[in-house]
Image 1: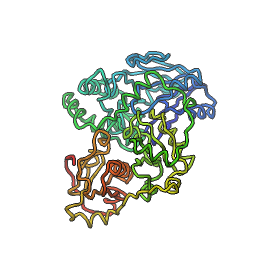
Image 2: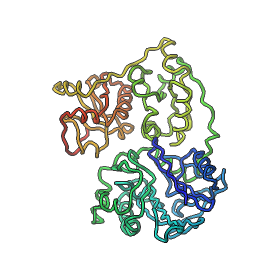
Image 3: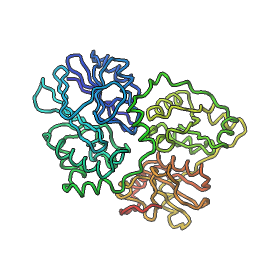
Image 4: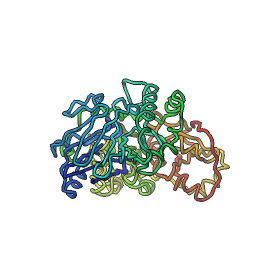
Length: 463
């Protein structure tokens, strides 16, 4: 048996390829499918089957394009209501490929149509080897239950409890667990950094599996959920119909500095994809920073949504190409263009660039006695509860699209996250909204802890 995990850090997304006797299966493919074609060619196998564990809400899947390129059959739960050609899957559906046996389990909870795939390598044993859990069971977490138009979060959480305890936890402890997402994904809230685990390890260490009472499980799974990005339901709808091939995207068009100035005055969005240090040094006023170096696509979807037509600001053509691809992975396809010549051309055209002031954690610590300074923590709730700066306000970046924190426009605000990526996004949004005294904290809370500066723990209260 051949087995490979493909991990896309930009979306914290894991997809898989399995093969036996020259025939391959792809599970939960990302939108750009060349990696699977290349892997199949390298392994000298043919992709004949494509499984989707559910209608993904946080990214656009490449299942339809991959099927068109390979002639493969797509398999998806009958509850998905998919409108493309596929085989509807029910509980205990079985597929044999060479020495591989795939048994599908209906595991509603994250979504009504979620399934998990139990993998048995019959060449070695009749016992199951692994389970591909989609967004039902993560490493250290379970899927969020608030992504359905037909079920309430409470109904889905109850179904999740049943799926976990009646299906997944009946598997042997040594069965490997391979989920569709890792730490940082918005499909859960407390995932660990590992990319796989075992049923036994999760049984002992996953907080959600320690909750024995069904009603208490429902209560905890539906309390204090992170904000659901608006684009989630849109991506699920795209995946229900199947996305168009990436080759159909039109080429990016150049936008002059003067044109961009006019567009910004009319409310357009400029998206700066350069690294955070470059943005802090100087950027086009009003532009939003989402650097390619982090989970760019997920935050672009959460911050911008699918209806915006951003103008991209980059340093190189390679950055523009990469940004275009990553945006398409979450369904942002209608790009208004790119700033021709980048920030240098903006300045040469006579327009001023704006800096983002920054300070170290030591400098921040020395200023904490300044009552005028607000320290704003934009991490998620679990991160805050694990430790935070005394006196800081908490307002997670997930909520910024719905509404910005209520701060006096001229009050000095020092913004931090875990390592400095999300805080620059937050600072750029605040600057764009007219906040005049925004400061980024270099290195974030990681740097604060490394410097052994004082911290406290406690429940989060929004700023």
